[in-house]
Length: 487
Image 1 (tube, rainbow, N blue to C red):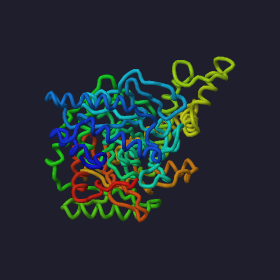
Image 2: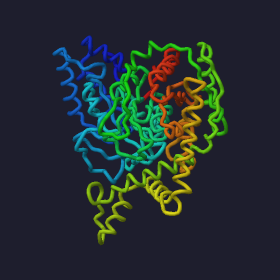
Image 3: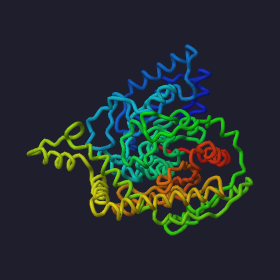
Image 4: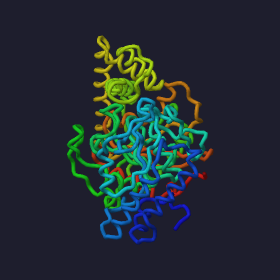
């Protein structure tokens, strides 16, 4: 059994499990041991239950011994961001508001992972209520980037990206509202995918911005991402925004779709604010696709300049509405200092929410208020339509778009105190959420400081199979996915 079994991809481990070269219990024990060894420095988890994980692993071994293995995820430890419900486990959203809350039910993606035999492994840290780009907004503790623990792992799904990069899980799930899977994947040197809005059920996901949120996988390789996506995708009647569409065998399609493809380069994504080293790495990736016979074409997304403003109006408005339920009455934090019922609302929310969440609730309440709704929220929705139209027009000419994932590499914890500077970290990712498109970040190089760089590929709606194949073709010709941080 490899000493670094915790760094191996799902595809390799599934083959070893099938051949009985390892057991699910041995694999889970290795992941648990690795977590205990590095977690004091990485701090990717809010909590984990070793005994429960080993019980699940033993059940996986029993199924395999009986000839009833459930596929490539059976016996694989998968970590979940602490906004995704798992029955009987804490569901905190990294907030004091839900610090003592235990989920009474499974989310749909949890149910699907259980059906695939995955071992539910731990609750992963994030920015509070998934609001942030660095995982510094967690009410419990910041998470360190495994490549340099003094730096951020990105956010809001920073715990999910860091745990995977550090070998504390074999795959993880996160949620992506404006780049919260892709940006931390880029900063931690792993693969992160945001599916088309509606492809993966949001039932059991704590809502931040309901028209933007989407659950997706973090994985070591594109093939692993295809395996996990295949397990969690599909229509769900419990989610009114879930879309009915055929789910292909994403893993099988990786080899079946070989290109060459027409790839677009949005000129608006290569301007001011992009780190020169990142720009150079992305340019080298573009040159690779060109060398493989792909047609490279410059395209324009003219409303890109309005993405940031539009996103922070729509997202905060929906957050204001969604977070109104946390009032100290039904569940969650209840203030002990309240004088009356009205004061209970004020005190519970003041004590339970952190500064960034309060900032977004206030902004969202403002743009929804009487006299300002038309000027801000309604106008933002109209601009959102124009942003989506830009993408769809570009896709009349190309199969996918190539961009950087993040304009900068991982920065020092505590370095960015200005909220606007933090918001700009999502400049290349938020348009995808506004347009409801699929996108994936894959490692494409390193800074001179040994910090990872991510390449973003943006696909057409519900064309995940094509997008994964395009990403896979790049990954197969490079060795970024086999590099791991030295912890």
